Image (cartoon, rainbow, N blue to C red; front, top):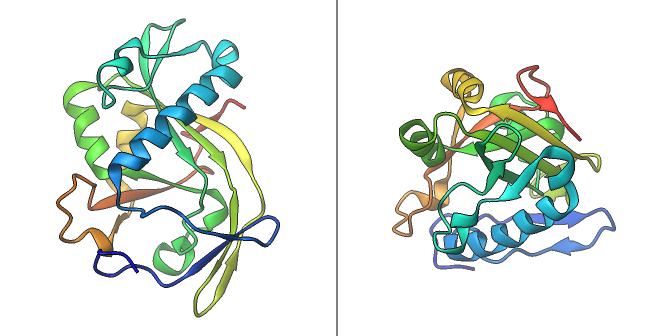
Length: 192
């Protein structure tokens, strides 16, 4: 049990049926450091093909946009999704197989500072089973979807906002909620 109110009491399982335990999901610092290593791996694997490099400013400021598209000379942001939003069906009527979430704080920051930024959703469902009072499963899925922030912002106007109960009284800078989006929407372009 963590120090956060409303800590979930569910279990997650990977493709081999092994239980997956994450570090405290509300510890923003850990997730920022973890994200940096995922950005490096993403660029190493797909950067040349997608014309992407790590933003050099990341060396001194971990909160600047992750990427630069060298062909378009535009900033980019990597959103890595390894765990489906399993409750998307029961809460919003969306198939969790194709759901990604987008942080509400990021929307405001991009609107103010980076309105031309490109967003890349890298999906690799490493967790495929959720168990609490019921069991919800998805199929393993990997891919990269791209959307310019201007188009994404239009989708966010109508997207449901999922409020994080365990962050209601958060003092660590975490977003209080995320928008729920379906990759089946034609505004998302699958690039890998």
